[in-house]
Amino acid sequence: QVQLVESGGGLVQAGGSLRLSCAASGLSFSGYNMGWFRQAPGKEREFVAAIRWSGATYYADSVKGRFTISRDNAKNTVYLQMNSLKPEDTAVYYCAAARGIGRDMVVSGQYEYNYWGQGTQVTVSS
Image (cartoon, rainbow, N blue to C red):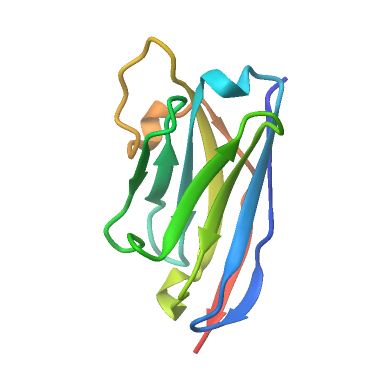
């Protein structure tokens, strides 16, 4: 079965950096679009970044210029490098996967994704 396992979360001071990883198994990773979403306490889950199977990347305005999404198809892993972190970045971060090849999709739409990880907590202190 498909599994997405996030890692790399933790506690960091404002201005610091973290790199999240999401290891995928049970799917043909290179053909999937991958996304990162986050949910802060008391708020709805929101789009953070996505990378298509082709390598095209997309970002929420709130993280553009600070976060970078990348993928390593040889390792079936997607990464989220987070720099210049702010307290408002505090949230549980989720990895998600959606079939990509031959399919047009809105990469920021949660409903588009078939598989989700369990999440990893990121806490940014001021």
